[in-house]
Length: 278
Image 1: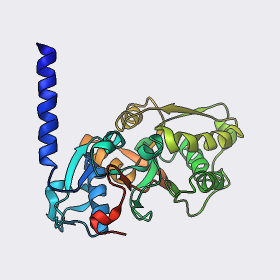
Image 2: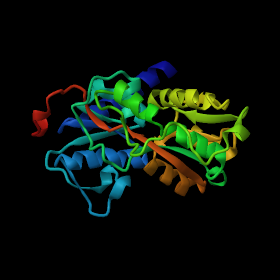
Image 3: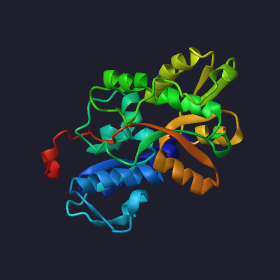
């Protein structure tokens, strides 16, 4: 009986979703505060919707003032958007999740000159330490710039480092740091791979960079806040600002490394002309 009830409920939910989305082009978008707003701003930049003037970067679908095309939205966790592409016309996906899902190039990307720079964060009490300075210099190196240029030629991840270092900070006493370990929590692609570049740089000074890979957008911050790791590298600055505000944490940025332009990806549709775009 329980199995029958579960099947019935699943069918009802499926039919309800189908009915709700029958009238317009459907978009799957992230449902967290900063990424939902980011997705809607991408659509607004393309002239597809208009948001209320005071909506800002934490806009939700409730902040849509004009929607002439009658676009319909399915709000899901950011990591799940690639998984629902087969059920919607288009999906708006964060760069790291598109990379993890091995998606083809997006139909269009947001402007890479955006406030959504992925950052390395530490506890405020550690921001001026030599360990923080050594880590920042390593991730802001020319080697990291070269890594992005060579690896992400499709533009799915772009370094935002204006003045790259040689990997080191002249003000740091590296001899005093020799033998120490810097533990950093991160997500997989591209963050952990960038940290592998930094790991080699720090190893030259006998400093160990321990990379702790996680698969969610909360644990890296709680780990830094609790002191389980020294730093994290997984999220963009607006997300970190919002996390601090919501959780009364004091995570501060020591390096802004790259942008993963959010993209509009094909689902059931692959032709932008259905949206009046070329």
